[in-house]
Length: 489
Image (cartoon, rainbow, N blue to C red; front, side, top):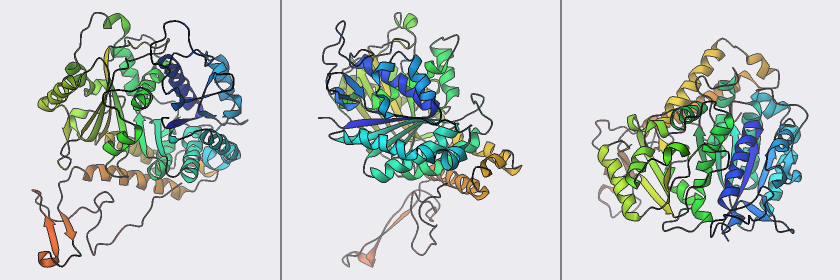
């Protein structure tokens, strides 16, 4: 029995992203929109380990392990027009009469707590139906009040009830022109302390990069959010592919987290996918495993607005699927290292983890993406993520220095000091990523008296002999420590 995954969809963006994800899972497992087994053109072995994301009802139909939570009735309205509306159980949907109005304080303090008890109960009941619960997937957007505010409450509740389970927090980060609210920088920064404190990994995507992929690579003339959600759904599916389908080199969610997150503070991941092309263009192309590996690290294939080639990667996990052999993977990885398109920090010798699965790439019926015979998805922990975080933090300070829109948050019960506490926590995360580039000197103390001098020292080629004061690298003996823990809003 594989480890089950419970998906928590929070806010309107989380619901829409979740629906795209479930459509893809139905196509991969050969299920109909009612959750029954398809009768025509069903790939062999697609029913294996369907229990990872679905549970079987008494009638034999597969029901998603999903909790849909929102402050208004958008959950009911979105489900009403969706083609998969008959797939979900209404008992695991929670809604309220008033929304968060793009205000973190409403979702976290004034309105959100009114549905928190029911939401936690829904999540708990889904977890109790699992035989071997592995992790939680949280889908939301940090730009809105529900995704940032109520999503933070849900994250705290999951961590409190299921502290030893992994939490993959996948969210849309506000960036540049593709925003829907003026106060999105406030909401994103205020939600950061909870992410840093309770999530096992934070998968960050931004709409600007996804829009560029849809326009420039998939040649979509009119880009809707549904096009973006189908792209992100491919990444969520790839993280559990080896759990659901057997492959030559399997990898679970735990393997991914262990090999991409070296410290609890450095948990922000970005994703990229290759090949990214539409069906009309793909039928004339021919790409090898080496080609898609090199393509996967290009800036235009990243789901966040960062450039892998200009920054350093701490660790990466490349997940291959389709007609791929170990020899092809070795050649692709060697080509990436030879071209220098993917550079790693000096203190990690390898930095790359690879997994392979023979299951071909699958797409939902409404997706513009072509189902390639060979594809790869990469999750990268890259220092370039600081450019997005710094941009949002700078936008937040511009408004906060003038106290613009602050009264709306204070009126819902938030204190002004919590803006500064949240911004300081985000700044510490940025500093931790910057300090990961420093080749520092470490000091080791031994209790065994057999060592000469009672102390050993490891030297590094860095000119500096002082270890940086960072929660990532720790403190030198005798140096004043910063207060422990994280500041929560």
